[in-house]
Amino acid sequence: RFVESLGAWLEQFEAEERPIAYEFIRSHLIFLSEAEMAHFAAIAYPDFVRPRLLSLAASMESLPPYRVAEVIRRPKFAHLQASTLFFGLSDGARIDQFRRSNRELSHEQILPNYELSPERVRDLQLWLTQHDPHNPVAGAIVLVDDFAGSGLSYVREEAGVLKGKIVKFLQRLVSGEEWTALTQGNPPVFVALYAATEQAIEHIEGYRERLLSEFSISVELMVVQILRHEMCIKRGSAAPFSGLVEKYYDPVEETDHTALGGSDVKYGFAGCGLPLILHHNTPNNSLFLLWVENSEVVRPLFQRFSRHRRES
Image 1 (cartoon, rainbow, N blue to C red):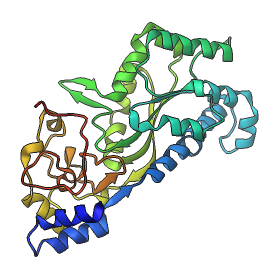
Image 2: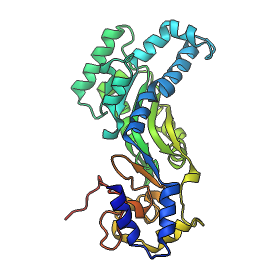
Image 3: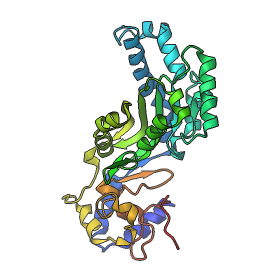
Image 4: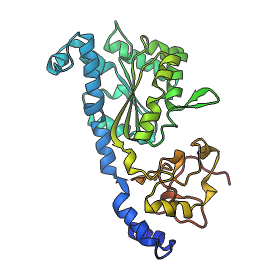
């Protein structure tokens, strides 16, 4: 129904503004399809995580990292790969796709989420014990997710306290008795994202030292598809479409949640300014005119299904 939706969307603008809106959609809109996201899930391990595990194993074996074939033949890499645990950070992590694409990994080491019961954590440790009775701990931990727009949902500071998905997971690692038994030696934590903006990458990377200081755990970010700064339309931009963003805005979408981004949502949450549509949803980091949900005066081009529903 895109053509019909596009026609209805364009109709809300003045006649002289429609060519500007139409040209923006033709030239700047980015759509990540089901097939593309599935591809990102399929290559995240072999192209991003596995090379990092090879580098770690090479260091353990006192070998240069470029001697890949020799590193693979040594026992350290086999142990590291078999003892690395993978956790989905959200439903978008496509854990089923990730499992099917990486047959060298055991299904036991890939879990759909990290909010596990103590019993399930103990089951994981039992599985690691069966794998290696002398060293039943995780060699590394990988947190998998689909998309980061601003990075604020992963880590942020509120009133001097760190919050976010990564923080919540690290707190579990260091505070739960079952988790600490599983992660003795503080294994590295890798955050593997299928797609992320440069804004989100810079934001998350900016907290690495703080996370290491508070939790004594190294956190490293890996991104399959990077969305560059230059694709965004930011506040103050000279792009013609920016004038429509400013003119056709309804503050109805501003909530306590969006306030965490530090501004209104004309240019999306946290001012990301993305012209991005995901096949299953429109992120609120995208330009307001693309996804507005609740306005009675502004029409969206794509639907958005918000996790933060308003009370009726």
